[in-house]
Amino acid sequence: MQIVLNKYGIEIKVHNDMFRIVYQTEIHDVPVNKVSSILINKSAKLTSNVMFLAIENEIEIILIASTGEPMGRIWSPKFGSISNIRRNQVSFSKSKDAINWIKEILTRKVSNQQALLIALEKYDYSNKKAIEHVYGKLEKTIEKLTAVSGHSISEVASRLRGLEGSSSRMYFKSINTNLPELYQFSSRSQHPAFDMFNAMLNYGYGILYNHVERALIKAGIDPYLGILHRNDYNRPVLVYDFIEQYRVWVDYVIVDLCMQKVIFPDFFDVANNIWLLNENGKRILIQSINDYLSEVIAIKGVSRKRMNHIELDAQKFATELKSWKEIKEKPF
Image 1 (cartoon, rainbow, N blue to C red):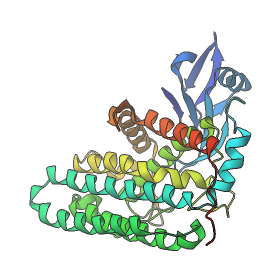
Image 2 (cartoon, rainbow, N blue to C red):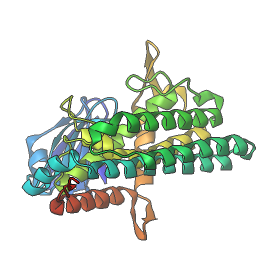
Image 3 (tube, rainbow, N blue to C red):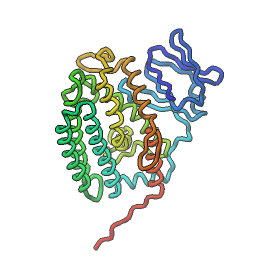
Image 4 (cartoon, rainbow, N blue to C red):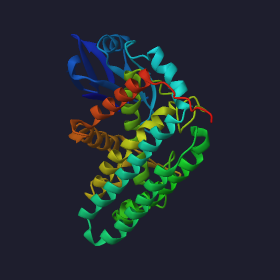
């Protein structure tokens, strides 16, 4: 389980070799072996004993921004990059093989977008024709992605970004058309969000960033060495590459919450038309996403929790990097 500390004044300490959570008059003791990670917002407090106990048991402590994105981590030294993985990762990121790697991820992302749009039909079957029209356009995007070729990412990056961007615009426009009026939005807005849907989406992606970054670090991969997203801003840009194939999981949870009409404006703080989830909104969204990520599904014949599939994919990529060697093309 994750311990999420996002209430003002909440505190976590150690008591009888357990994590003790204290909030006003409430006290909860959580056994160490039940905890996978501890997420802390600015308003929470922790003791050094909590950090030592977490490190000893390979439990991450993640400092979370108001947007849900991880701002910093405290983790066990057992989570670290293996030198030959990192060395090969540098070479791989500049190679022709990296093009196929990112094409596969983006193709999977667009295929997942198609699947979610088809799932919308269960809410309102009358929109079937319009949804299938967008589905067909996304199919053409997959064909164009498959056809992209070059000798390095730098040659094709703008083309890949253009295709990914146009597919996402079509996809979110179709989602918006199918949402109840209360949740509809004019366009995708990232940091800041100007509506409820985008505020949830941004926070949900922040939760997912945390899982993806953890999986990469645990596998020994450097999250700061990107492929399509480059290393210009001292941010974990490989996370932004790797996460693309999983974003639809957050999309589905938020769309479903909206379709059930269980999210309301009073779950948000609004100032200058900027929307942020408040404590109640965060609690609902965090629980909904964690429940969804904990569901067991089969991918390529392997049944695991969704969050475990992220770790398996990261481990698979690390294994490939460990033995990767660039094949030089021979000149004619």
